[in-house]
Amino acid sequence: MARHLGCLLHMQDEDREKEGRKKRGYRQKVKDIVQGALFPEAGLDNGTGHAGGAGGLVVVREISLFSYCESCLLPFSIQCHVGYVPSGQRVVGLSKLSRVADVFAKRLQDPQRLSDDICAALQNSINPAGVAVALQCWHIQFPEVLRCNPNPKHLSKSDMQGWVQASVCSSSGVFEVKGNSFWNDFLALLKFRGINLEGGSKSCFPVQSWCPSRSLEVPLCNGHSTKSPNNGKVSSKPGHAYAAMVAAVTSILYSLGEDPMRKELIGTPYRYVQWLMNFKSSNLDFKMNGFNLGKLCLHKTGDVVNSQCHIHSVLNLPFCSQCEHHLLPFHGVVHIGYFDEEEGKHIERSIFQSMVHYYGCKLQVQERLTRQIAEAVHVVFRRGVMVVVEANHICMISRGIEKVGSSTATIAVMGQFSTDPAAKALFLQTISNSTASGG
Image (cartoon, rainbow, N blue to C red; front, side):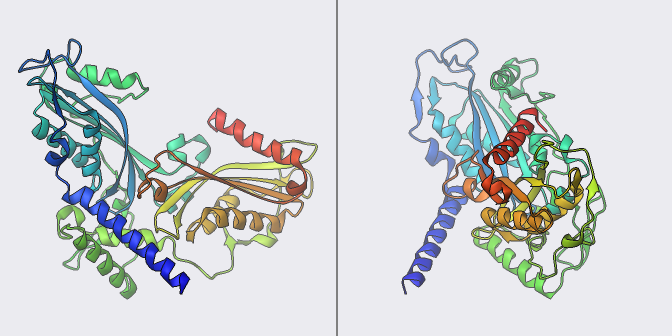
């Protein structure tokens, strides 16, 4: 009875959270936010103001937001930068700029429309001399893209963690006047924080191939299908089970107040179902690249971290998984250390990557994922195995608590690593050195 009551209360909390998100995104009006936050400020004239100094530019940088891609319903991360030039002898409370941006982020979006929405809303609600908005956006990748990456050691940190990056911007008023210095000043103030938007054009940066799901073949309502002209990748046709899932996702869009027949949402339910099917559990025996794990041939190598204890390390194996508590992705990298049975023998990196992919591509929790990888490696290397998983959880940053920038690390140790503190410290230092060098 107590357990049933606990589940019921948890469901009620989830319902309240969803309703709150809907209210913030689709029902909350910008004028309600800004009203009462416009303050008179001496020294501002009816044209371009001064805002405490010649030029009159006010910039709020690095507003961390999360939104959901209208093409596939997957979350994307945003760093939002907003600038405006006051007019009419009034300035706006700075927190309101962040709140206005948050309202539009709490809707199904793409980066350019989100930028345009924020810019237009601020221009219309506070009537400044001009508004500039720049967004840096990161979209989570599909798991198979991470798996097929041929050379993950040479990727940037954001790429290593599976994100597609795009930058967009919008402007109004004095920021659009040819030869005006406001736009250049806006970019210069961003550079103070290490934010360098290359190109710096007010037309900004084209968002091509933004959503990874655009490579999928998508059935349309008339029975035909379409596929991306970029790479021509085609997915399998949907079956009866897919049809029921697609219908359920379509119903969710209706409940949000969206129109599933809006051109940008055509195919979205199917793409989201395709994402979920990446995490369909399999009862097949674990095999990697066609070889049974327990029968793998070990290959000679000179890649030994410490010749005295023969610790091998395989670092920065990217993965993407799905949190079974919230059906939201978590992603990051896996580091594996192991003692070999004979000096200088190892398993190829691609085999470890396949193992990580196998255990990651299902409904998971990070603690279990870490343990399962350690147990699988220990089947081969029984002297000792240590696994460290570093991940960012979307449920931590796109839901109620919204702790942007948080990350989670977990460790599993078996065999000699359990009893040898020096070996454990050596492997952890190897990971630290790799992180510091960008490897």
